[in-house]
Image 1 (cartoon, rainbow, N blue to C red):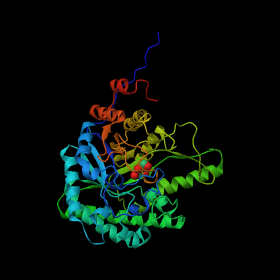
Image 2 (cartoon, protein in one colour):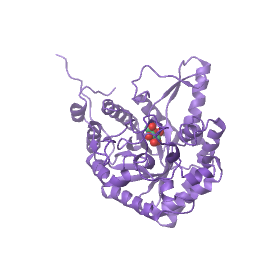
Image 3 (cartoon, rainbow, N blue to C red):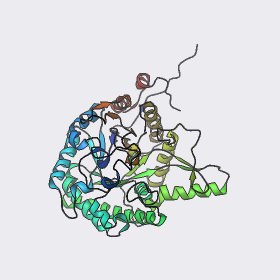
Image 4 (cartoon, rainbow, N blue to C red):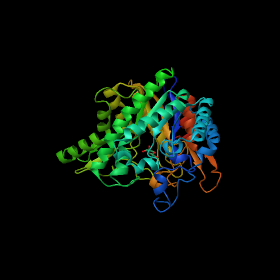
Length: 425
Ligand code: BGC
């Protein structure tokens, strides 16, 4: 008789923070005078949708928080939309600031720790008129923005992120033509990265200063990096190796080197993990046939997650927070297995001594996915975009995630209930 293979429960250290993440522009809805409001109209988005309503997080935040509580969240990552609190240069919308305070306090009152980004892939229109991230003046603008945000909300949480995925933003906006201003210039991309690095350093200092001036204790500041293993297509080809080395340097290392050149300007190592790249000379990314694909065609490589956790722990020895990890999956078929596979790899890293303190799934709910629009579903919560009230339902993967959080890890019972065939690799 064949005996069923058993595996031990995969339990995380006490106090591990399980939760999810959103960004303001992708979820809030409403009138936001940012650069996307000029390009994200029906004609530019693949599915013809728009972020005008997004998923009405601004309006229904209490309902979303209730659902996060139902999924046993301990952490929630969100962002403050610069254009919403400062719609015109130097003019602040105090009502919007009050509303954000309500949202953040609501999150805390639900026993969920808020983690807040100052910048997540969008900019006020007034800033764009001045040249946005290509104008060196952005560093002072960002410092001022940081000061205002921290003075307004610094008493509500101690964990702050300056910029989401600076390298992805710089490439998408200035080289690949995907985000506004849709440029195609390598030089502009590096200029943007350089200014983002300076702005990060200025924001890091400002957050620490503002906390200290207000006797709020010591904050934990980081930025949400995007990390991915980059491997040569043919490990014996010097050209492929060179191409992989260069891509790895630009995507993974360059920004870290810039911000930590003189002194370390991160207190917590935060990163988003989605996939890995296999590259052929020159910078030609080809799908890896060993991996399943997400609905957007991205390689699903859970072991790559373990690889990056180990790599940056060995390099930095800073506590790690996973600020995003998720999959575009229309019908929630792949997400449960995706979550189990990635949590398992994260557990392997923890077992090896890596200090991972929390994990935010991307995303809390289906939301507006830039050029892929509303059809690209990343959420633990399903949103019916066709209904004005944005009807919300926790998906099976959301229930699974809630159970993992309650058990503080993966147990055999959870696997039996949600994905009986699943086993750790
Ligand atoms: C971004 C999110 C985005 C997600 C999925 C990350 O690069 O931070 O805003 O929705 O990936 O594409």
